[in-house]
Length: 155
Ligand code: SF4
Image 1 (spheres, rainbow, N blue to C red):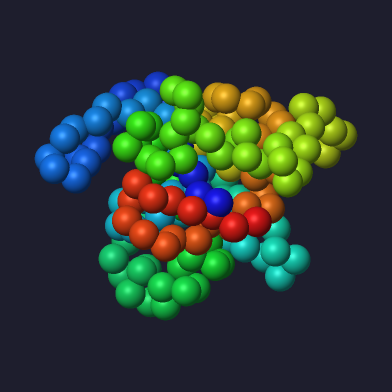
Image 2: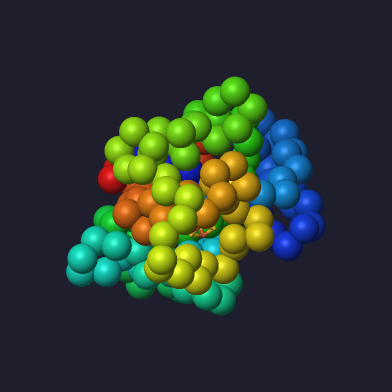
Protein backbone atom coordinates (compact mmCIF):
# COMPACT_ATOMS: atom_id res chain seq x y z
CA UNK A 1 0.00 0.00 0.00
CA UNK A 2 1.00 3.58 -0.21
CA UNK A 3 0.41 6.66 1.83
CA UNK A 4 1.25 10.29 2.84
CA UNK A 5 2.43 13.12 5.58
CA UNK A 6 3.40 17.27 7.62
CA UNK A 7 5.89 19.98 8.67
CA UNK A 8 6.17 21.73 11.99
CA UNK A 9 2.87 23.36 12.39
CA UNK A 10 3.29 25.33 9.21
CA UNK A 11 0.83 24.95 6.42
CA UNK A 12 2.36 24.04 3.09
CA UNK A 13 0.82 23.98 -0.31
CA UNK A 14 1.45 21.84 -3.34
CA UNK A 15 0.52 22.02 -6.98
CA UNK A 16 -1.91 19.38 -8.14
CA UNK A 17 -2.62 18.21 -11.69
CA UNK A 18 -4.57 20.87 -13.49
CA UNK A 19 -2.88 23.64 -11.57
CA UNK A 20 -4.96 23.29 -8.41
CA UNK A 21 -3.17 24.33 -5.24
CA UNK A 22 -3.82 22.33 -2.12
CA UNK A 23 -2.76 23.53 1.33
CA UNK A 24 -1.25 20.88 3.55
CA UNK A 25 -0.37 20.71 7.18
CA UNK A 26 0.32 17.01 7.50
CA UNK A 27 2.90 14.79 5.92
CA UNK A 28 2.41 11.46 4.23
CA UNK A 29 4.82 8.86 5.67
CA UNK A 30 4.75 6.79 2.51
CA UNK A 31 5.18 9.19 -0.37
CA UNK A 32 6.89 8.81 -3.75
CA UNK A 33 10.64 9.22 -3.96
CA UNK A 34 10.98 12.52 -5.76
CA UNK A 35 13.04 15.67 -5.56
CA UNK A 36 12.07 17.68 -2.50
CA UNK A 37 10.60 14.74 -0.59
CA UNK A 38 12.03 13.87 2.82
CA UNK A 39 14.14 10.72 3.03
CA UNK A 40 12.25 9.08 5.89
CA UNK A 41 14.05 5.75 6.27
CA UNK A 42 15.99 2.87 4.77
CA UNK A 43 14.73 -0.69 4.40
CA UNK A 44 17.07 -3.06 6.23
CA UNK A 45 17.99 -6.69 5.45
CA UNK A 46 15.23 -7.84 7.79
CA UNK A 47 12.75 -5.84 5.67
CA UNK A 48 12.07 -3.39 8.49
CA UNK A 49 12.51 0.31 7.93
CA UNK A 50 15.23 2.07 9.92
CA UNK A 51 14.05 5.65 10.32
CA UNK A 52 16.28 8.69 9.98
CA UNK A 53 15.87 11.20 12.81
CA UNK A 54 16.86 14.22 10.73
CA UNK A 55 14.97 15.56 7.76
CA UNK A 56 17.06 14.89 4.70
CA UNK A 57 15.68 16.38 1.49
CA UNK A 58 15.81 14.18 -1.60
CA UNK A 59 17.92 15.66 -4.39
CA UNK A 60 18.10 14.98 -8.10
CA UNK A 61 21.65 13.76 -7.57
CA UNK A 62 20.44 11.14 -5.10
CA UNK A 63 17.67 9.90 -7.41
CA UNK A 64 20.08 9.70 -10.35
CA UNK A 65 22.49 7.60 -8.31
CA UNK A 66 20.05 4.72 -7.72
CA UNK A 67 17.66 2.80 -9.96
CA UNK A 68 13.91 3.36 -9.75
CA UNK A 69 13.44 -0.12 -8.29
CA UNK A 70 15.96 0.58 -5.55
CA UNK A 71 14.30 3.91 -4.76
CA UNK A 72 10.95 2.23 -4.17
CA UNK A 73 12.17 -0.98 -2.54
CA UNK A 74 14.96 0.29 -0.28
CA UNK A 75 13.78 3.68 0.92
CA UNK A 76 10.75 5.39 2.44
CA UNK A 77 9.91 8.99 1.70
CA UNK A 78 7.59 11.62 3.06
CA UNK A 79 5.90 14.55 1.35
CA UNK A 80 3.00 16.85 2.15
CA UNK A 81 -0.26 14.95 2.34
CA UNK A 82 -2.38 15.71 -0.69
CA UNK A 83 -5.62 14.80 1.05
CA UNK A 84 -8.56 14.09 -1.21
CA UNK A 85 -6.31 14.17 -4.28
CA UNK A 86 -4.85 10.83 -3.15
CA UNK A 87 -6.81 7.70 -4.01
CA UNK A 88 -6.12 6.35 -0.53
CA UNK A 89 -8.16 9.21 0.91
CA UNK A 90 -11.46 7.97 2.31
CA UNK A 91 -14.10 9.47 4.58
CA UNK A 92 -12.13 12.67 5.16
CA UNK A 93 -8.96 10.87 6.23
CA UNK A 94 -6.15 8.67 5.00
CA UNK A 95 -7.46 5.15 4.44
CA UNK A 96 -4.15 3.38 4.88
CA UNK A 97 -3.96 3.25 8.68
CA UNK A 98 -7.35 1.56 8.63
CA UNK A 99 -6.16 -0.89 5.97
CA UNK A 100 -3.02 -1.63 7.96
CA UNK A 101 -5.14 -2.76 10.88
CA UNK A 102 -6.25 -5.68 8.75
CA UNK A 103 -2.73 -6.95 8.22
CA UNK A 104 -1.10 -5.96 11.48
CA UNK A 105 -2.46 -4.78 14.82
CA UNK A 106 -2.00 -1.08 15.49
CA UNK A 107 -1.11 -1.67 19.11
CA UNK A 108 -1.20 1.46 21.23
CA UNK A 109 1.38 0.43 23.80
CA UNK A 110 4.51 -1.67 23.81
CA UNK A 111 7.64 -1.63 25.90
CA UNK A 112 9.85 -0.76 22.98
CA UNK A 113 10.45 2.90 22.15
CA UNK A 114 8.82 4.43 19.10
CA UNK A 115 10.85 4.73 15.92
CA UNK A 116 12.82 7.98 15.84
CA UNK A 117 11.38 9.38 12.66
CA UNK A 118 11.63 13.01 11.62
CA UNK A 119 7.96 13.80 10.96
CA UNK A 120 5.98 12.55 13.96
CA UNK A 121 4.59 15.95 14.95
CA UNK A 122 3.10 16.28 11.49
CA UNK A 123 2.59 12.70 10.39
CA UNK A 124 -0.84 11.93 8.94
CA UNK A 125 -0.86 8.34 10.23
CA UNK A 126 0.24 9.43 13.72
CA UNK A 127 -2.38 12.17 13.72
CA UNK A 128 -5.04 9.57 12.94
CA UNK A 129 -3.90 6.50 14.89
CA UNK A 130 -1.35 7.71 17.43
CA UNK A 131 1.49 5.43 18.48
CA UNK A 132 -0.27 2.38 17.06
CA UNK A 133 0.56 3.63 13.58
CA UNK A 134 4.21 3.94 14.55
CA UNK A 135 4.29 0.29 15.66
CA UNK A 136 3.28 -0.99 12.25
CA UNK A 137 4.96 1.74 10.19
CA UNK A 138 8.39 0.02 9.95
CA UNK A 139 6.93 -2.92 8.02
CA UNK A 140 5.48 -0.76 5.25
CA UNK A 141 7.36 -0.62 1.98
CA UNK A 142 6.11 1.88 -0.53
CA UNK A 143 5.80 0.89 -4.16
CA UNK A 144 5.13 3.42 -6.84
CA UNK A 145 3.00 2.21 -9.66
CA UNK A 146 1.44 5.36 -10.91
CA UNK A 147 1.44 9.12 -10.57
CA UNK A 148 1.27 10.92 -7.30
CA UNK A 149 -2.37 10.52 -6.44
CA UNK A 150 -2.46 6.77 -7.00
CA UNK A 151 -0.09 5.67 -4.29
CA UNK A 152 -0.06 1.95 -3.68
CA UNK A 153 1.98 0.15 -1.08
CA UNK A 154 2.76 -3.46 -0.41
CA UNK A 155 3.47 -4.98 2.95
S1 SF4 B 1 6.92 6.15 12.81
FE1 SF4 B 1 4.88 7.02 13.33
S2 SF4 B 1 5.14 9.26 13.15
FE2 SF4 B 1 6.90 8.29 12.08
S3 SF4 B 1 6.28 8.13 9.93
FE3 SF4 B 1 5.70 6.19 10.89
S4 SF4 B 1 3.56 6.48 11.60
FE4 SF4 B 1 4.41 8.50 11.15
